[in-house]
Length: 188
Image (tube, rainbow, N blue to C red):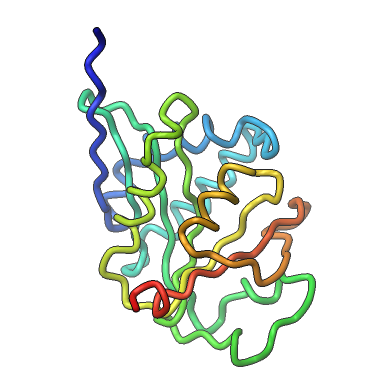
């Protein structure tokens, strides 16, 4: 009989996440290599140039899931959106100005959340999500998700996210659904 593997999930600030970049990269490359993402080595390298540019920000936070032997199995990271964010500009249809208003505290942008295939279906994504968001001072969480990522879509819906539009998160990127989680409503 095989003993179940224990998974630990730790929250990290920017400097700690930077020290664990290899673990984040491994999870990202593994999780996003498959359809519908089909990320290449160049895509992964570009993602982690952006990652390194954000980790020095004092508001950056991350969560990393590992097995007891230290194998990285899942990760999540993001930061609060500042007043100059272009996230809202990427939507294909504009949203009201009241929704777009950012002050560096109102909205937490969840940039990445991924679990490697062999460890999916065990609640690790939920634990990463909870660990990442625990104690944040934000009204809501905003993220982009590929519409063909059925498992991710189902998880986000079950956690209370709702679709508010569609966007291309980067130049040449596929159209993604933009989801928001109202933390005030989930706390009530």
